[in-house]
Amino acid sequence: MLLDHTTKGVPPHAVAGRRAIGDMGWNLLQEHFDLPACVLRRSAIENNLGWMQSLVNDQGALFSPHGKTTMSPELFDMQLKAGAWAITLATAHQVRVARAFGLKRIFYANQLTGRPFIDFIIDALRTDDRFEFIFLVDDAQNVQDIERAARAAGLAKGRLQVLVELGYPGGRCGCRSVDEALALAARVVASPVIDLIGIEGFEGYLHAPDEASLERKVRDFLQAMISLTRQCHDKGFFAPGQTLFSVGGSAFYDLVFNEAGTMGALPPGCKVLTRSGCYLTHDAGMYRNFFEQIKRRNPEIGHRDKGLMDALEIWGYVLSRPEPGRLIVNVGKRDLSPDELPVAHTAVRFRSGDGSNRPEALVGHQAVALNDQHCHIECPADSPLVPGDAVIFGASHPCLTFDKWRNIFLRDDDYNIVGAVSTWF
Image (tube, rainbow, N blue to C red; front, side, top):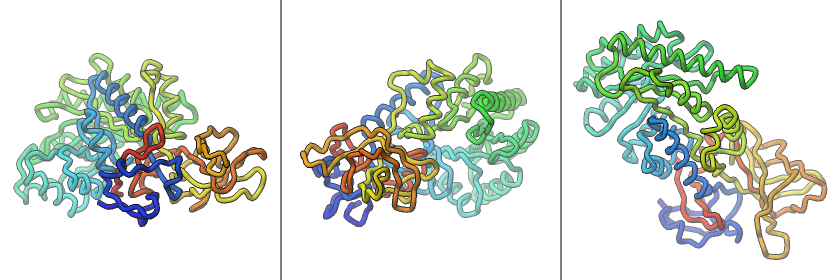
């Protein structure tokens, strides 16, 4: 796939295949780019890949990172090569993209609904013996619909593998009680075409007024999931082979390991499968705060090695200095997540006049508002930045930054562009 000036963030007059990007000699400090541009620090990505996979391995767990964060086949490949068991996805489109790029094991953290998508999955399982697709159920009617389509297609028993999802009142999907989930599990066990292979839940939407209360809520939910898993095991509901206990997004995976990893907590043959996605790039806001909480709760996890590093950068030009204490930068909601304001952490003084173009840490420069294409920054009256200089931002919630870019560059620690990844939202 060729990249040219019609792709946002690509240097003017450039025409290059993505695989040749590292040979182009581009450097961010030499102002080879129109800005805004989105880049990933390669060293931080490599650190985060190794950090999380090492943690999961040491816990004796499985890892299926959530692909919705990046929707990047190149990054999926890095994660699988680092040891990920599968890639997690959440929509029909995401699964179709993953299949188009050859993924063979997908954990679908959602209910399988809609005739076109059900037929697509059943056909893929019927025609590709190497393809594994694990998904969630929380409704008996949905189970019946899937059964009907599978039987009509002649799909063999065992190819459809499901986890019953346990939720909580006010949450997202999932059975609202252990008893309801047990009844659904019994229904799945009676199916002639579907195998029950585990229990799943998502703790990320639990809310509480303070950190301690939230931790208690998460632990209580995990204990309910463990109880459900043990009861299903004792009733002989799980299909032969490995059983999955899947929970843990990007905020509470330490609590999952603590609760489920306790000796005897889970039945024999049951493996924890965690699904963090935002770990790969980390961020400068929401997930940085979550990681600080992990450090407080579990220092032995939070302080492992170098920890997670913010890998995602959005570069923009200073457009205007309309007031002594205000800068306007050409980065907005169309370039990075609006969930929380970005962090303006570094500047490059392209107009400094000395030719050095060296990154400088920004102190006292705070983003205070985002428009579609503009970021408002409050700055000290003596800030040296002028129009034409660059500001480097860290984003909060990487999921809603990746979807703004079809191409994201990889840079080394000398700001040389050494590669690129594509996104498919």
